[in-house]
Image (cartoon, rainbow, N blue to C red; front, side, top):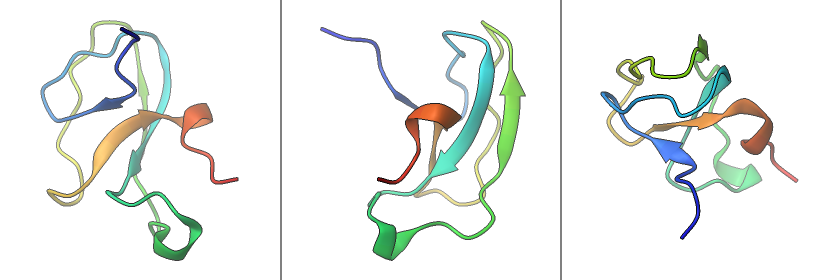
Length: 65
C-alpha cells in the first residue's frame, strides 16, 4: 500500500514542501480559483481549507495535465 496523497485538516505533513488545496473532482472543468498554498515541514499539522470539500495535496502532484 502506498503513501496517502491527499490530506485533511489536522493530518500531519509526511514530508516538507509546498501544499495546495484541491477539490473533489480534479478535472480542468472544475479547477479551483485561487487555491490556498502553504509551506509545510515534516510533522506540521494541516490547517483548515477554504471549504469542506477541499483537501491538501503536495503542489507538484496537484498539477492538471
